[in-house]
Length: 308
Image 1 (cartoon, rainbow, N blue to C red):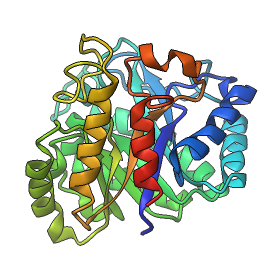
Image 2: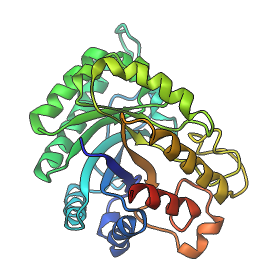
Image 3: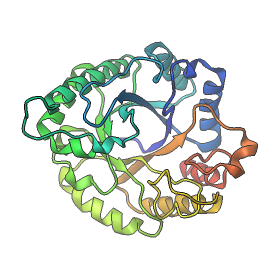
């Protein structure tokens, strides 16, 4: 597997967003400003609550197929390799890790089989697009912690994806959860979210290495990043943490992450979180406290690492 010098792009893009000239300019700037070689198109379907069994991947909340295909094709003209990552959000704001149902079917209660039927239909739809557009990889889900114990359903879902998409398939488990996925043998690449505290990377890498070694499969961090906010380097997964804008703390996180992972040959890349499809004005970078690196010191650290 080629080293993935990646960035996530297009998260929460709504219908029509990819048709805007600013979205294509943002993608061009991603390449120019960071040296990224792999762009991960992350899609956000919706279900109403954590116990809803119907997943909506049509409507105003998500880019339509034509504009997604057009943007993937544009990315390829820029020389990007492309990865498709269809995931799901909960409309009421609950994090998708809490999507959950009874393990034993109970009459009148929502059931795993109905949720997986809807989720698999969603995945099959985008797997066909990934195949048609020549995507280099497919990510079958993201940080869906409570679902991960349903190994049989996940194996069936991945088998259905493979009927449509013939490239490498991975699944993006959450931070600290690498050892809780019993079905890594069903995918081609192992991946997780690298939101680990500054100063703790060596401990976490030691732990992950032991977990993945028996599978003898490539590994990369399908997500990793840190808001530019005081305190975020210790809880980089907490997008709601309150704190002052702190560009240096974000930069320190990236430097530490790259320093520590570059010493581990089994870490084969990143899908950094994240690059906006509609960028803020660069002059506003000094007041921006989210995961974006555009116009911040962390952007230069990313480019230096990716251009090595």
